[in-house]
Amino acid sequence: MTESSEVEVDFYVKRYSDFDLLRIARAVGQGFEEEVTAVLVNVHISRHSAVGVVFGHTRKGPHGRYADGHLIQTSDILAAAKEGRFWVITTIHSRYAIATFQRDGGRRSFNEFRRLVGNRYSNT
Image 1 (tube, helix red, strand yellow):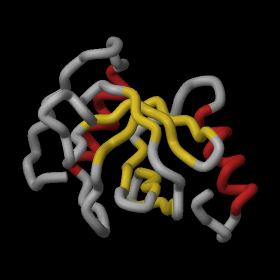
Image 2 (cartoon, one colour; image 1 turned 45 degrees about the vertical axis):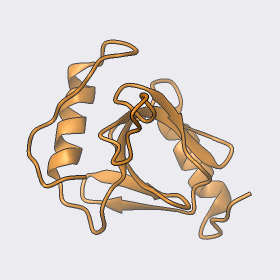
Image 3 (tube, one colour; image 1 turned 180 degrees about the horizontal axis):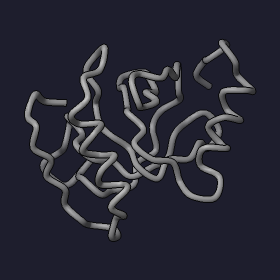
Image 4 (cartoon, helix red, strand yellow; image 1 turned 90 degrees about the vertical axis):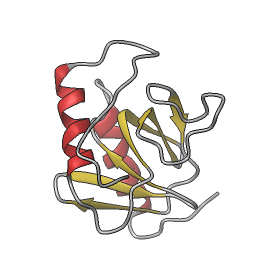
């Protein structure tokens, strides 16, 4: 993420709650140990990857790839750690800050993933 304190959000998919927007702004404003590739909202874990809506991706493509408000499925999660107020997941080539979990099971899927894999993170 950049050093800027401004957050520009484009609404392509749906209207986001004030809570989602506040968490995105806080994640962008928080310093992380290493650079974060993007912020994810409405996250749930599917198999070994995170699925959520992406904001502020550092590698946005010219044709809308990784554009704000688009659904993304990450590559396999290699590590997850709490940094400040946010969980940060590390994949093969990226680091994502999780701003919010999906209602009705998002956090539960994340906790279940962490319980099952423990310290044995690996890609499939």
